Length: 131
Image 1 (cartoon, rainbow, N blue to C red):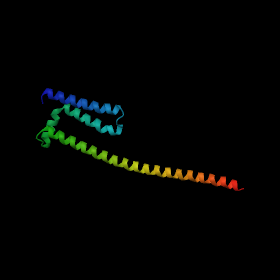
Image 2: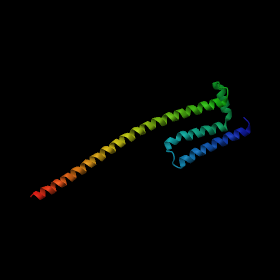
Image 3: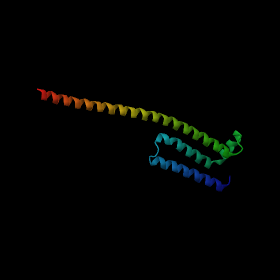
Image 4: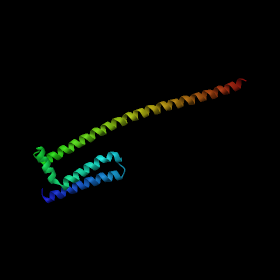
């Protein structure tokens, strides 16, 4: 790989990694979610620093081009991330539904208590007037 391509690859991987880190620092991501993106950025940096390893691995696994191996790895990692995110989203959706139902029940109970308290107050006033 020519030196100019290696420099472009390294700069692209470095900028991507810094973008991930800046998102983490600005609290856009929680630490447990950001571990995936840090590892992903480090893998990109490692491949940029040692492109010979990618050529060797792609030849070992029988890929015609190292770019095909990179695409396969990236697609595989992103599908895994998408699946885990979908599972997490499903759990959160269930929790939101349960929380909304609980809040609605609590609100109804409070309204019933207020109605009872008003009815008791009215009964007490009418009871005093009758005496």
